[in-house]
Length: 250
Picture 1: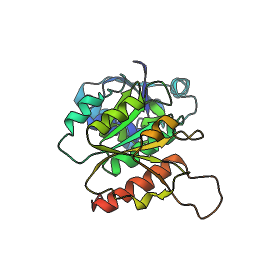
Picture 2: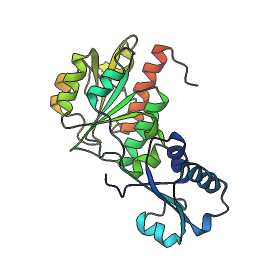
Picture 3: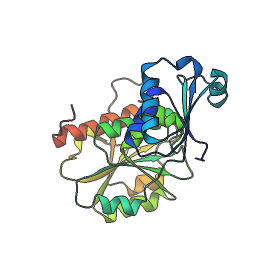
Picture 4: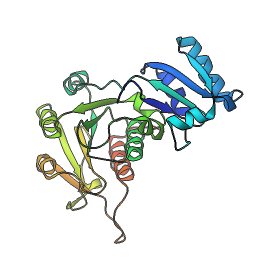
């Protein structure tokens, strides 16, 4: 991401403003949205935080976000602040922690949906490879409904090294693989730190990461249809862990 990164959509901008964890350069608001209640809330929050906002023609917003999904607002922000893996491990050294590792996922909407599920399931960190797959962008931000502002995002050069580092610090590694023998609910998730690996939409998890996994699990299918969307699969497994751990997020 660059300094020209954006967040678009009313709810996503509100979440980012309220969290205080992102640095805004400017907020662009469509002339057609002046009386919208959510726009008024954004203006109020921006004034409180000393952030510049500007009314512009809708065409300008369409030039920045051609698909027209901006809902009349685009915020120009600095890049997301990634957390170092060692800092993350140290921060949560004394707590039972879940981490999700995304191995080469290429669809921003899938990553956003996974992050949203992770926050709801109490996951503390998302690990992304710096060279394979999508990093955090405006589409991820919007799809997650602002959830990226409520979880540690960790960017690493090597997922293999990251997994080895986690294992050195008492994390069990679980890979979601449709070729696995064990079902996802056969694993006892209680009383352990674990890292869940979710693979790319078509390629799945790389062999090098599967070899490092302590467990490989599948979601059983009742038909011969291809497979679940990766974001749905991640949510199913994570909330099985929530169920077993007896946590109440309702």
